Length: 377
Image (cartoon, rainbow, N blue to C red; front, side, top):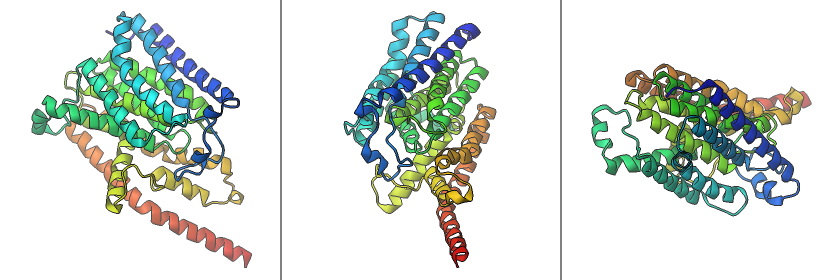
């Protein structure tokens, strides 16, 4: 069934407006409700990139926008309302509740949120009777499609992507920007293979994220929080799985390209912490976005870079890098070989960037300190 322009326009407009309205209300209410205003501990956290209390419940706006848009689309598409709400939203509702408890300060650990993601994916998979049919590994996919392997692989992949979006949620607009670009890319791929339902949900997710971005970028009046990051990653993962299941036309490697940045961040975080013998859940400041932010912070305000703009500028610096893989993914969505080669190429570039970023940062700081010392002498 093709997308109806009028109904989709209404769904997208409502999604963006509801998301923006809820975010605006949360910002206003945070002045009088302490739990909404953020936590002092967040400012001192290792990965913190802000120095003032800020609401971390932007995910509520995205969730409300997603629900509103899906309701409008479900009505216009003629679906039974209970069916679409149960199948598409039961998993995200569970995940949203657990992640929101962490955002409101009830201390849900990373392991707990990860388990909630796995449980939510299990609900989605059994409700839709749909699992990841393979990983684009040719003959091996014959074995990977067996339920006893497909189910745990699906749970692992969805949890990894959801956690990845949470890991890259360190500077204004990065995680949500990656999510919006990924959702838009998914919709373009879906339209090319006539997967109109997937395209509709992708557009609605993108519109909901844009409603949040109005208040998040550039000045960070509200943050995604775990609720928003996990919700975006979880929904994105299932959009990708739905596309891969659509008549077998789409290579899984194209979906990897569509949401490449959070997946790469998870991969290299696991490798980095594994070599150091650290817990996989232990935070550090070695993600590429935190290194870029530290590089920008090395420049003093007298160099023309105001402190207020360093955070959003870090996102703009990274913009070409997280946009490039989805563009390639759209172009080669049905070509296993080229898509796989593209994933390998981007991974090589990302790996080199991760290895060289720290010494480059140290070199820049040395040069800046030397320049300051020369001026004083």
